Length: 136
Image (cartoon, rainbow, N blue to C red; front, side, top):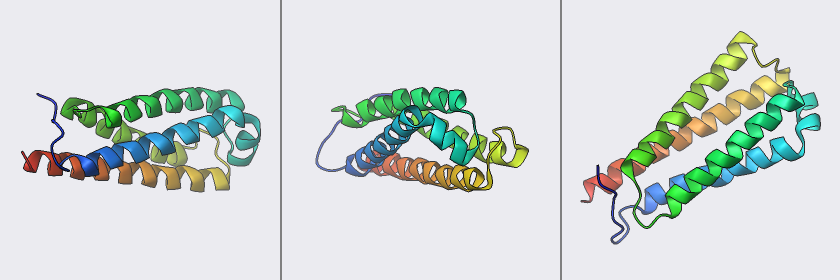
C-alpha cells in the first residue's frame, strides 16, 4: 500500500485525529510516570503498573505524533494505530469487568471514560482514513 500524499486538505481530518490522539496519549503517559504513586492511590493500580503503562503511552504517543507529522501519512501505519486503539479500548473494559487491575470505583470510572475517548479516536481515524482515500 502506498502512502497518501498531501494535496489540498484531503488528509487534514486524519492528521488532526492522529495528532489529538498523540497529545492526549503522551500527556496521560506523562501523568502516570510523574505521579504514579498518587494516581495509583486514587485509581487503584499499583505505581509500578502505572509507570509501565506511562512508558508505553509516551512511546505510543510519540509514534502516533510522528505518523501525524509525516508529509505522507501511511495507511498501514494508520490502520495499526486504529487496531491498537481498539485493543486498548477492549482491554480497558475487560480490566474493569474482571477486576484484574484492582481499580477503585473512581478508577473503574476513569478506565471506562478513557476507553471511550480512545474508541472515539479510533472512529475519527477510521473516518479520516476513508476521507483521505475517497479524495484520491
